[in-house]
Each structure stands twice: as structure tokens, then as C-alpha cells.
Image 1: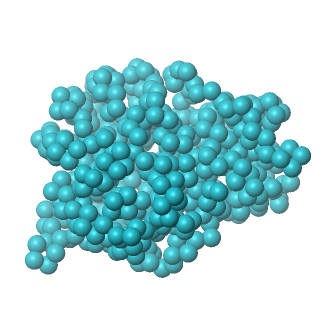
Image 2: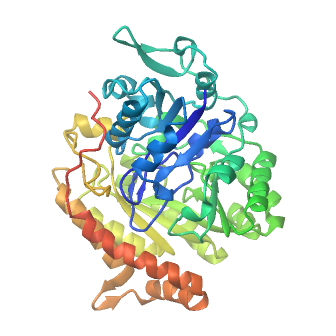
Image 3: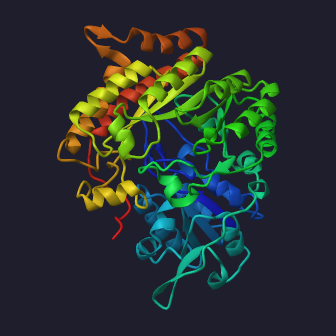
Length: 487
């Protein structure tokens, strides 16, 4: 069948596509590449990938494109599910015989609930997509396709799960699909130079953090990887196809989980002279960091999460504050930049731990940072804890502009206090207080702007978006587009 792989139109600036780790409109324009749709698109002949949000494609434009296809695959998420259901219904309305399948963590964890949401959805996928969707596109009857759930005679049928690929080197490259169907200038990230490219060279994560979506829903806790040679070849081809790309990001959940492999990849790609970055846990030893730095690693995306050790223990982060301090000092010594990630609203949060985390972030002093609110995604341990303890009763995860809002509250700290903590964190980290301004942090941005005119234009644009973000956070705390809660 002629197949369309789709990230449907959504909120303005909504990064909810098939590659985003958590789905919402962010502080500055940010879009991740749609890896999970590009892989099956790479092996389904005649297919097309449409990533509507970053390309600014409207519902009308995408509906017009979709008329020419027999089979549409929509990647969805819990925050954007209702919106995607509405779009599927619009597709069916204009072409009733079109086959529509949904995929993503939402459908892998809640297949029955997802199918019950609309008759427009013909089937939903489990965690493994590539060969599942190839089978469907080739016309195999749904009853014979492993890895899907569908309706028959008024009942939901659960087919056998699709086995995980044994050798990730056999999976298709996404680069040709990106070259054919995407405009890479539309993909931004606030802590990487523009344009950037991201690659996945493995699936799964060995850590067991209770809040993290992908390892608990679609990736698993076994870090399965491509060989260093295959990963390096993808890196080389990306540089060859897009010589204008200024940095390539390894978007594996935690690339540094496998240190020997990380070192091997670094040594293979270092001679190319292309800056790169990766996700890392704050426990990588100095020797590995040095090999990475010596071979082009510019930045690490690091999940600090909290400055309170008990909260880190509560979420099974597997890191200690003393080790985090040592790791951060090593990165500073080596000149590896850090984008620090923090979360408010994890189990054990109180007003005092909020203050601890802000102080800890200032002490670590990463080059850039972001703070999120704990989001209870169905399928995660945090979700079950929040439901069982009545910390969460199905409130929306987003407001009407697609921005994350507090959905968890505790006896010791309310949702409103958590919401206010986000504003406080950003203000104190970037601007400090009237008696102790954070001049050094602001100078980091201005220094880059003074050196590079393109950087100046970009930072001015992002600054405007950043200030606008705070207004939109409090415009409307209702959301009609979020997924129904699990029963």
C-alpha cells in the first residue's frame, strides 16, 4: 500500500514527534528528528514521512497530502493523543477506506484504551515498529501481523508481540529518508548549534529511573546497540549528506552506559573533525571523558534531576551527589559543556528540596539548563505510584497552548507551588537576585553573540521565545487534547 508516516499538526511549537522524549511546547523552539517513523519509512517502498509541526504544515495541507495514500501511520503520545485522534477522524472523513494505524508509547502501553478512543483507528502497535509496519504495508492481513492490536467483531484482538531485533546493525538507516522528506533547517535545539543532526545507535537504557518513559515502555532496560563501526558510518554519512551541520547528537537514552563502545566510537569519528554530543549519566570516569573530548565531544546532556540525595534514591537514579560533583568538575577541567536537566515534583519533593536543587544547579553551573515538571506517563512506575498514593488523579499534562503544567501534587507541596518553582528556578539560575546577579551566566550568552552574528540573531530570537513562554505557561491550565488516563 502507498504509505504515509505522519507526525500530525498540533499546537504551535509542539515538540511531540517520533523522537521527543517528553512531549510539550518548550521554552525555546525545539524539535527532535522523527527517528521512530523514519526507520519503517526507510524500508516501505514509495512511502513518505511528513513531520508537520517543525515544518509548519497546517491540518488542511496535511489532509490534502494524505488523500493520495492508502495507509497512514500516526505516531502519538499521551499528551498529544486527543489531537491525533481528531486528525485521524478527519482523515477517515475524507477517505473512509484509508487504513490508519497508531504507534508510540501510548499505544504500546494502553492498546485497548487507545482503540476505544475512536473507530477511526484501525489498529495500534506495540513497541517494535519497523517490520510490523512493513508487514501491514505489504498487505498482510491484520490477524497475521505480530506486534499489533486491532478490533474484530466488536472485540479487541491482541496479536503475539513482535520480537526485538537481534542485530541493530540490520536496521535501516534513517538518513536517506531525512534527506528526501525533511528540511533539516527546521530542527532546532536550544543547547546545540544550528543546524544539528541527531542519530540513534542503540535502544534501551540500563538505568531504572521511575519517571523515565522510553525504557519502561518501548526501549527496555537492556541497552542494545549498533556496532561502533555501524554507528561511525552513520555519523560519517550524515556529515557527507549535510556538510552544513554543525553538530551531531547521539540520542541513545544513555550512550555512556557502554563506556568501551563509546570510547571506540569516539576514536572512529574523531578524525572527521565534526563536533558531537550525547546523553550521559553523571558518573562517567575522567579517562572516558578525556577520550570523548579528544575526539570531538563538545557537550553532554546530563540528567541531574535533583540536588537532594533522598529524591535521587526515591526515583532509583543510581547517582550520588558526591560523584555528580566529581563528574561535573572533570567536564569543566576538560572543557566539555553540560546541558543540565532538572525535574521538580518527583517523590519526596518539598519546598526545602526545591531550594536545595536550585542551589545545587548554581553550584554545578552547567552552560545551559532546563527544568521540567514530573509527568506521570502511563506505563511508568511514577504513574502507578502517583495513582496509588493519590498524588495524581488524571489531571492534564499540558495547557491549551501545549505547555507542560503541574499534574502531580503532594501533602508537602502543592501543584501551584511546583508551578511557581519552575519560574523561580529559571529566574534565579539565569538572573540571580538583586543583591547577587548571575553575571557569569549571562556573559556566556553575550560572549557567543558578540563573536558570531548568526549566534546573535539566534539568541535574540530565543530570548523573545523564552520570555513569551512564561506568559503562556499561565494562560490556561485546561487541556482537551491529552490522552485518557489508564483504568
